[in-house]
Image 1 (cartoon, rainbow, N blue to C red):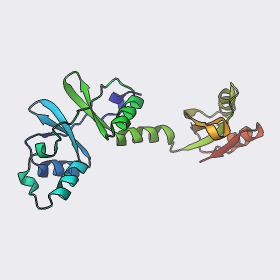
Image 2 (cartoon, rainbow, N blue to C red):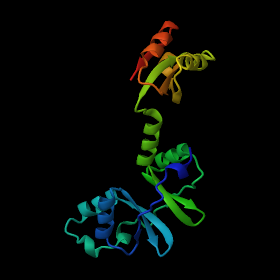
Image 3 (spheres, rainbow, N blue to C red):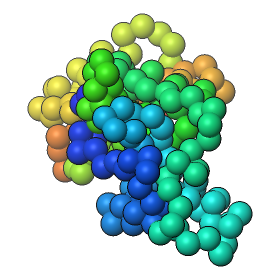
Image 4 (cartoon, rainbow, N blue to C red):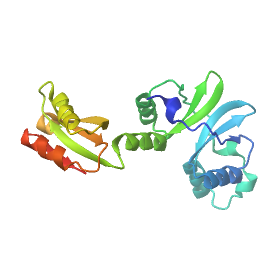
Length: 202
């Protein structure tokens, strides 16, 4: 899955000469925590709600309507961006390694979107969650086990919507979280248990 598929293309931004009051209002009104900062047409920085909160703690008597955004942009801030055709996993790694919560998405010199940790979390929740049903199957290390599980599900005339695999180092196994297109997982669970699988439904 690529960044362009999950980024927010409706970019809300401020100019470096805009006031902190305007920046704070934009974040509150749009329920966002990060704002790109432009100087003219050039993206120069990113600020967050924590930046404005920290400024208010340092200067509780300051009038935010009289303070420019540039006052809270560190002079040595390194602007970290990402391309739209990079994987979501790489975006997560980049944010974690740099301890940031958002990335401007750039196509050449043009900003075309923003992706945040919240966007990534929602992506993974979408992969894991199914409004109908899912089962969790513990698999060993032997080859072909997931194929056997899929065959049991297919024989029950049920479609698999998603499969997500998680390593289980403590048992030297894998857990397969399988979303199913059915409201009744009981026959599938029973059949898999008969074959010796440790399984739960949720």
